[in-house]
Length: 445
Ligand SMILES: [Zn+2]
Image 1 (cartoon, rainbow, N blue to C red):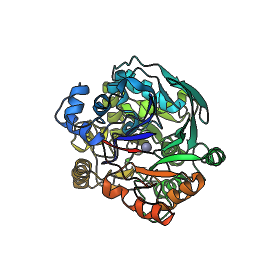
Image 2 (cartoon, rainbow, N blue to C red):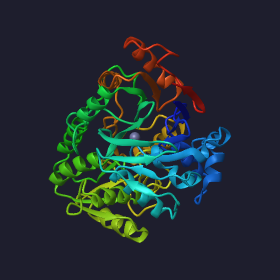
Image 3 (cartoon, rainbow, N blue to C red):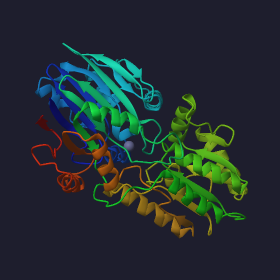
């Protein structure tokens, strides 16, 4: 068995891993490097395609599969969950493979809606596998069973992908945290992981982004309490209240609506990406916000809504895009007075998010915050808990699965290094059964 680390081993983003078993190759995730995409947008390159993205290193460098003579041996593309750093490259490079794309219902719905929005199509067959369901893939000489096991993260229908091969089981665990009290959906499917661990797992590829954080990541239930706490201080407030969060974070949106409703304001969602994820969750029955929320997306609708809000600022609760200060997002435009609403002293802006620690985001968010502060806006930052497990989540998953080999992923070399310490502490030996890979690397197991 050969594991080829294509992307996501030198940065947070463009996740992609290949596993080769003889004449058969399987791909896990096909993500974008989002900061590079933001750079393209700042250069006003709107209609970007594969060439632009490759030039910016926004795509995983899957051309190495051509060099290795493996491109035509790819039998399937598995998607772990619906975040763009895991599925965002599918519309641009999946066509290179004569293989189906498989994922959970929410993941596939997001993929399809993203392609629809951006007017992209791919020739690949797209297969939805139910959460905790399985599927059989035909290889050259054998048949492979793949399971999509339910995990908790920060987007619905996250999965650990378990591929059963004649050479042992591969588990791809990008991304997750252990949440025993999720706000939406159920806790991780521990029994499936236990069952598989008894069969013997050959290798675990594991999201190790926050292994340096010596704790367990709090449950989403804690973020729900943080939202509740901030809103509880706003009863009777006569100023504007704006909230921004990750559009794909349906559980967080649910908490914001739950406590937002108690403020007796009309709740409006503004921004295209919010619509995309909310519709996906409605498509498959994960959540339904229709009765509680007014969705605003069209250009003239956005302008007229902000005019109305401007006249009755204590009657609305606005949920909008732009928590990273992304150029062109609703918050970015509001901060530059490019929409018909002006912030005033005492207005409230809640970030139910954390700034992604890459230079472009830190700069964009910092500059935007400064513009808001000039207007006298009260900023409530980091009303948030992460979706990535800390060291104790990782320890728990490794002991539960007890794989023969461990491969950390989802970060730079420095970010992944703490996993080495954890693995050694758990009895693994570097180079023997613990493997630090870089982009474009490989290991034979
Ligand atoms: Zn993710």
